[in-house]
Length: 244
Image (tube, rainbow, N blue to C red; front, side, top):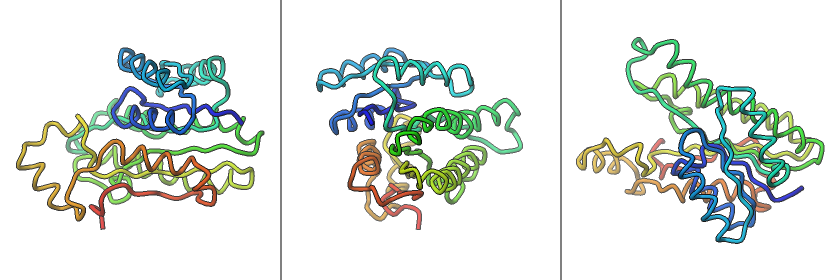
């Protein structure tokens, strides 16, 4: 197979770190974004400076047509992906009883159903060629649940179940499907925390620090390397032992 990695949510902090790490690992990168075209194009420039091929492709995970177009765009620009990283996500914070149908549907469309539809499209060539890697980026809340993030937790739990089930289906064809489950990662998403709230949260983590986007990128890098070729259908938690 080729050395192309298709990464969703590449304009986000975790997605961008993952894209850069895989570029360092020798992959050409198809950087999929939804709204932040500027950041996606900047990322493409950074990757090309590493002498790797790269292209920015818009992807709306709530649209089946957009999913097909993004896959076609990747193939035309860089070739069939040997690696798929489902990193895109959205959340909805608040009481479950206050959640609208529209919010509920979007959380599941982006975090779960969109990832499933894209994976179904991409793995067809992997199965034909008897090789490839899929890494789904879930969350520790998908493992243990989080109050006031019920829909997000449920969608990420579904992504974990999807990982384990599809891994069993695809393993005989040499396609390895795994999941990374980040804990508290230092991103703009957590910028609303006060200094004291952040300190209290970090105090709960045995490693006594927040995770970095590079920590997550390193986990993805490992799972799509030859060093992890006997690892399949697993959830690799990246949380500093926050969740016991």
